[in-house]
Each structure stands twice: as C-alpha cells, then as structure tokens.
Amino acid sequence: MNSGRAAALLLLVALAADAEERRPLQELIDATPAGGELQLEAGIYAGPVVVRKPISIDGGGMATVDAGGQGSVFVLETNGARLRGLTLRGSGENHDTLDAGVQIRGDHNIVEDNQIEDCLFGVDLAQSDENTIRNNRIRSKDLDLGIRGDGIRLWYSQRNQILDNRIEDVRDIVVWYSGENRIIGNRVRGSRYALHFMYAKRNEVEDNDYRDNMVGIFLMYSDDVRIRRNRIVGAQGATGMGVGFKESSGVVLEENEIVYCAKGIYLDISPYETDRKNRFERNQLAYNGVGVMFHSQWRGNLFIDNDFVDNFTQVAVRGGGHAMAHTWRGNYWDDYQGFDQDHDGLGDRPHRAFAYSDRMWMQLPAAAFFRASPVFEALDFLDRLAPFADPLQILEDPSPRYEPRNL
Image (cartoon, rainbow, N blue to C red):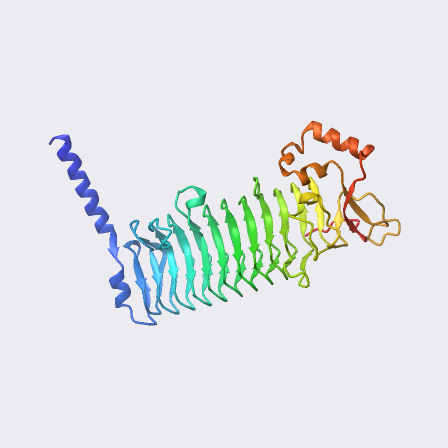
C-alpha cells in the first residue's frame, strides 16, 4: 500500500472514530419529559444543543459535550433547568453571537459542578433572573487577552447567584445593567477585569479571591454595591488597580485585603452624588504602588479604620490637588510620626501627609517612571530636609490608630 492510500485510510478511520465517539445528545434531551432527569453515561456527546423545557441533565463528572467549534455548547431557553457534572468544550469563536459554554435565556436555572473549557464565553446570561451559577471551572479559548470571551457575563439580569466558581484565563467577569446579584466565593486568575460593573446597582461581592488580573474590581456608574472580605492581589501594570471607581456612589468597601497592586483604590469623580458617600472601612492596603489614588481633587468619601502598610505612596491626587475634602478617621499609617502616650490605641497627634517631590509625578504622570530612581529619591530627601517650597498637605487624620488591625 502506498503512503497516500495509507494516509487516506488513517483519516477515514479517525473520522469514523470521532463520529462514533460524539453521540447525539439533542434527541436524548427532546425525549426527556418536562421535570425529568437525564443521567448521561460516560462518553462524548455532540453539541450544540438547546434545552426548551425544565429538565435536569447530569453527567456524573464523566460526560463531555463537545460543540465541535460551532455556536454555544448549551442554550437554555427555559425556566428551571439544571446542568450538573458535565465537561463542556468546543464552542465557536464568534463574539457577535456570544458563543459560550452555556447561554441562559430564562429564569431559575442551575448550572453547577461543570468544567467549561475551550469555550469563548463561559456562562452568558441575558435578561435572565434568579439563576444559580455554582462551583464551575471556567477557561476561555487560547487567545490573546483582548479577544477572549468573558468567563461569566450578566446582561439585564437580576437576583442571580454566582457562587464558588474557579475562573482562569478569560477576558472579564461583567455585570452590566444588572442588579441585586450575589457574587460570592469565586476565584479569578490571569484575566483582565476580575469583576466589571457597568450601570449595575445594589449588587453584593463577598469572599472572592482575585489574583494576578489587570484589574480586580471596577465600578462604572454603579451605585450601592457592597464589597466585603475580598482578597485582591497582584493587579499590576500601567492600568493595574485593585478596586476602581468611575462616577459611582453609595458603595461600601469593607474588610478587604488589597495587596501588591499598582494602585490599591482608584477614584474618578466618585461619589458622583456627593450626598451619597462611598465608605471605606477596615480594609488593608499593603505593598501597593499607591494606596489610594484620586483622579482629581474631589470630595465626599469616608476612610475609617483602614490599615495603610508599606505602600510606596499612601495617598496621591493627580493634577497636584489634595484629599482634604474627604473624611479620614482612625486609620493606621505605618509612616505616622507620633506616639500613644496615654495607651488609648490612638496617636497623640493627628497624622498629616504632605507631598514633597511627589508633586512632580502627580502633576506630570509620565514622571512617575523615575519615581524610585536614585536621583528622584535624593531629590525627595533634600526636599524633605530643606523644602524648596512649602509642601502640599494631602490629608489629615485627626485620630490615627497606633497599631495595625489583623484582618
């Protein structure tokens, strides 16, 4: 047998084996009555498939559904369906059609304990309420960061629960025009925005771990969000930030650890409604390039009982302004110069922060490239020793805490 005929025979054998492995799934779904359960045997099943009735599909951790590079693996066009214990893979690559592991177009569905891999988007919810996305492992396709899909995407979707998922190497987790969702116990790695809100109000974000993403959490025009007990680590790079705000009001950020980020907290015209203050309480901001960065001189935020530890710059204001119009009270500052002689846990004198040579890079951001250089450090030392001009006071905390809080 010549080499050409042998190669053709091997190809036919491979195609036949692939066809045999990819068992039809849509007909099994169609044959399952509403309210019934489809227990899949171990093996590989063919997608894409559409579920139009409330059934439960359980793969027992042994069944794989492969869409073969076309469309979304599962589309749930129903209320009350459940997908559990499946491996979903091989979606298409079309951003316009949001090719995903699971598209949800209904309410009260549950997607849990699945592995979603080689899918452009992970789970996409559109105008879908009160669904549960729990304990899934999600990874996008092997594409450049900007053209991956989102791990979980909510669009005009309310009161959903996003719980205990493990998400890596996706583009973003996005919550757009969606409110009263609970995002709890998730872990996101190696992505762009670990969590991005847009016009999304009254959401809860608790006990998540966001590590080595470009941005931890970003809020755009999103009010009354509660962000508690999250750990945000390693948001580095020119745009890196732990938590960012854009024209957002009434946000509570408490008991979070924001560590080793280019900017720990970044505030741009926030709060937008200055009578609805953002509250930052009992957070730890440590080892960041800048602990808190204000885009401009603004007003109306409350910083109470936070720890500022070993940040290169504790607080900075772009454009050379100050942060005196915010409330600072009871925070721990590791660069505080004072004592606690009465042992009440508070410093005996206010903590005042000044900008010396830092004014150069605050007014001219490009100069920040030289911030840790020997020349810049020498200039800063001389400016503190014998100021060339009166330093700019950035903030005052009248009752600084003397010892750090252990979160």
